[in-house]
Length: 281
Image 1 (cartoon, rainbow, N blue to C red):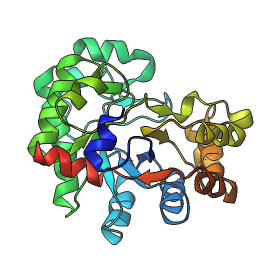
Image 2: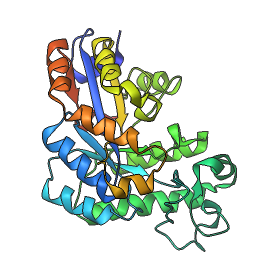
Image 3: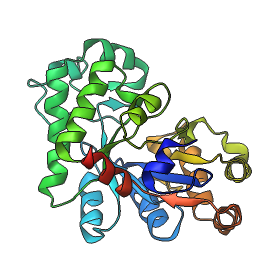
């Protein structure tokens, strides 16, 4: 039985799916792909990376399309060694969040970050990223993390949930036992482990996604997808993994994807109804 289905007003056997495009703002190739999947594809929600180079372009798009649901993709990790960025705040103000070069830690050194990051500095940087969005006149629906599933540390998770409640937002969580914990508190979440598209083999991705839709269980499932265009920028930023993004884009824009979704009777959701219930708790 799905607690979230009941909280959201759906039958227990309803198959609900959030398809959220992560990493909006990372680059122009990613922005354009996400814009297209939101307008003409299956994506119903996205997550904005405020410190990254194409964030202004993403903010402008969201201002022009205020009905598009989006979250703040709290970003304190660089996942690509050759394409890195710094905190919004001066590095002297948040020294525990950066490596000796003054940039966010790379994914390969995420354990160093998790060990060293001071909670007060994280709170300052997280707030700065949220406030940039609010100062642009935008209204996000939720918070999630870039690379740091469930915050990476119990106190970071607790901080994020506290910020979400303060700002009137929902929170994405990725796995049990946290799913059960929040649902016991009357907060809707996905019922099943988060699907990260970087874990899906690119060689037969369309067929895999079609099978996953056919096998989608009752309750709320979330897919964290990563659309990107196949161009020089995308291949330069991610020389070893650009195909993850281009195959995501191809499937999300395909007639096949829509046909499978309609045939299976799957209901696409965004975070707006989740946000409403989080605000009421």
